[in-house]
Length: 272
Image 1: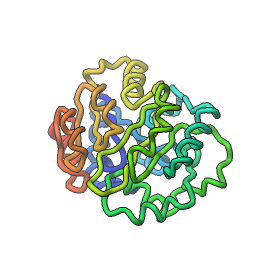
Image 2: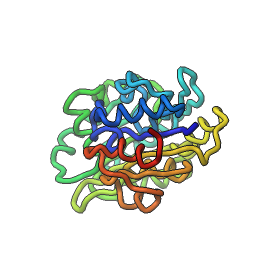
Image 3: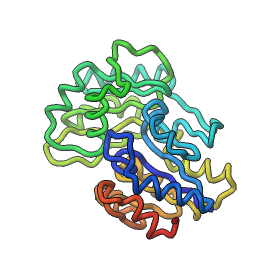
Image 4: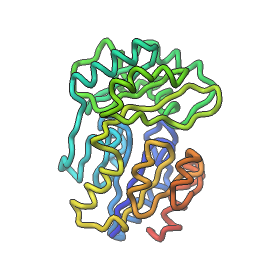
């Protein structure tokens, strides 16, 4: 039995979308019918990944590793403390950084974030996901409507890296600032991920729970928040549309998400 872990945006689907290519769905079902298990492994919170659960996944690693489920069983749950959340928002906002915060059941973004994103000329799968999520109202509400629920992750976007310096000084001991690879002149974007978890730790947790050797795990990703997953699994696969640094860390590169890359990768790995 193989355990297969799939990032969503830019990997399983086009960024910001909730419908995988038909070829990917057929490949996933065929792999499961052969006795393998397939999991989502994403930075999305449970609310944002929920539309994909109808496709019959065996569980998921959400919030970049902060919320892990095996079937209906919750294996791991690690939100920020209120103090960490407040420190993050205070230091980031003070330096003009645009923020989105994510709980289990919702997401809240700064009021001016949509205008900021629409002015950017380039980007990556994370930027595109937020553009589409904002445009189609996929549950990202104004920050002033935040209900105080536990927060797992802060997404950040800004025009200069030094705008993050104060937040890094205050939170760098406890949080990784996972920044995405972007085109020249595009905005800087990434997320604050608690050092207590990452996608790779989520992979190892599920493998241990199922008694599967880590060598029998496979991960598909495209952006730098997939790096720990790619390093943790027995076989790491990067999409052709992915970050160059992730391709360098992966064991193989498969065609882009829009070119039936998932199905072709499953075929190359003998999962069908």
